[in-house]
Length: 247
Image 1 (cartoon, rainbow, N blue to C red):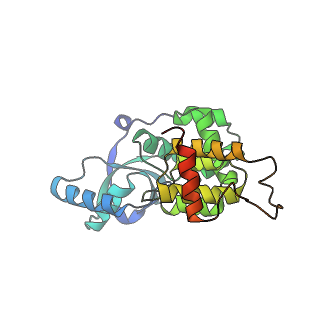
Image 2: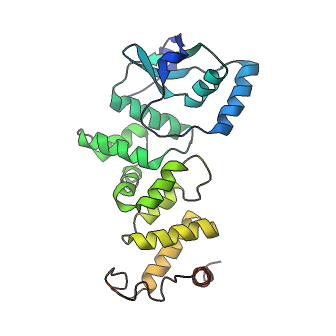
Image 3: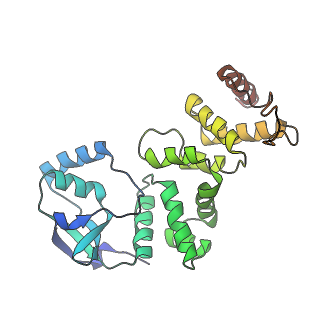
């Protein structure tokens, strides 16, 4: 699947006939919309949005913020490239567009889309080739769905374009930890200490290697013992001790 704007015609279509897609890869960022509104007001819309036709209406493939800015400016029609795409092609085009522009997208919705493709006969390798990523990239995104604590996933969904300190890369590392309670403790550390992904990897490895076999058993009445402190002060001491060897 290759999309090239030069091979498509730009049309003026009614704003009230356009709706966002249901892939939920991005949220509206009010700061972006405000900046675009001012830019479009002074210089016009320099790049058309892309939509696909759905009966008499249209669904946005990319250009959500441009569309929203034009709508708020009271535009009745907007320049758009109209293409015919299946649900699968539309989803992958949205992913590719955002990845190529290095825009952070919702990793949970992204993974759910990949799972849908797999249920329809796609392989992980097929998906990776289409989006220009490695097989491991797709595997790690899919791991978030089943391996990550639901509270952490909720944060990823609701703050994907905002100030959530837990990035998709953090989430992928946390999803490798089978114990969900430990995931929450580490997520709290990420927020409180501003841990990078590299620091999270090192801390996780250090903590897990220091724990005696079986201490993560959820049936243990002493869980999590002294190895994962319950108090904030305990977190601080553990963090300082862990990082002191590689500062």
